Amino acid sequence: MQAPAACHSIRSAIDKQSMTPFQIEAILICLAINMLDGFDVLAIAFTASAISSDWALSPGALGVALSAGLLGMTLGSLFLAPLSDKWGRRPVILGCLLVMSLGMLATGISKGVTDLAIYRIITGLGIGGMLASLNTIVAEYSSARRRDLAVSFLQAGYPIGATIGGLIASFVILHLGWRAVFLGGGVISLLLIPIVAWRVPESLEFLVSRQHPDSLPRINTLLAKLDLPQLSELPSPSREIKQAIANRDQLFGAQICSKTFHLWLAFFMVMFSFYFVLSWTPKLLVDSGLSHSLGISGGVIINLGGIAGIFLLGLGSARFGIQRLVGTYMLATTASMIVFGFIGTKVLFLSLTAVAIGFFLFGSIVGLYVITPRLYEVNVRSTGTGWAIGIGRLGAVAGPYIAGLMREASWSIPIVFLLFSIPMLVAAYALRQLKL
Image (tube, rainbow, N blue to C red; front, side):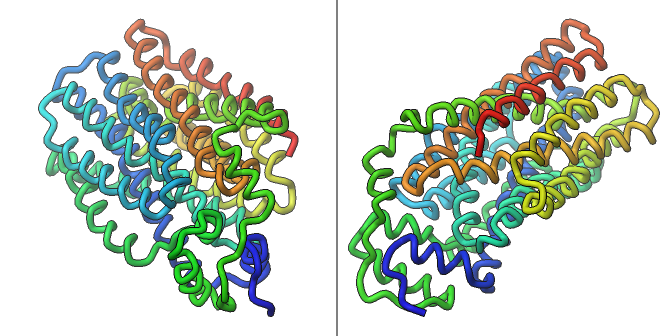
């Protein structure tokens, strides 16, 4: 095979060859990071009842606590994620992982709801800042045949981490208290940093596009690990990449403006419903008369359904088309949420419906993560992805907070679920307008 002569040639070579152990290892480490994300975000939901009882919080105050981390994730996606287009994906992942770890440790020693909210914002900054880079690394180091499955696999880390976290949280809260959940998560996050520094690679496309003096040896080191020929000189960025560099801050050009708007709308609406479900379901089940352990179990079951939904999305996208399949998932989420809200406290039926919600809801949001990298060129990919996620996080912040206000105003649980199912219909409409 001829040595790649340009960025698109390297991309083509990676697309066509089988996945090497190096690529699989990088994806697995990114998966582990995303598992920590799922563990942390859901830790606050699983501990919500214990925190509320410990500090005698009103539903409104609890809603603020649940939304604080999501606000941090919004800020991280909007302002930290774009730095990876300037500094590289790997440094941003490492820096954000450190911020996330410190935030989790601080949450475990918070003295009141104000401290808790501040530390949750800090934690969220780290999480939100690195998600786009994780998505980019996995997409760029996957072959064309396995790319959708690999990105879906990455996003499956979220419910896997949340499921494991829920199982652990139920035991830890009972024996060690809710603070131990965050302290343990912070320690695990810190231990992951040297592994990431050692084994997670920089984006090849980023190295080519930046044209730094040390890019050539770094590219050749990565090509050797990919079993690809070495380069004798630094490739020139393609015409498309040069145009992207010139327009890196312009995500609203004539050709992309409509897609950017509808992508943002879809992310906002899906995350509005997504984080309501994940943040409030355990507490609402307890409010319905179930025990704390059954409330946590409800959250775990939703995440288990999500794992199945994500993997089947990755497997089915090649056959049915990712856009059509995700749109179907969104419509099915609406129906599942309505049924869940009105089904009462029959544990068996609640469990089955919770599986369905998780299956379709997680598939909906992961589908957006799969679609987003296809809309933007390499030099605005993390910026475009980060801003889309950031706008979505505004919905994530609003959802749990508004749910808290509804509960404080004594809105019934069935009506709350009904209203929070409607944004999924809007998201399905927005997705259809992308016209991939």
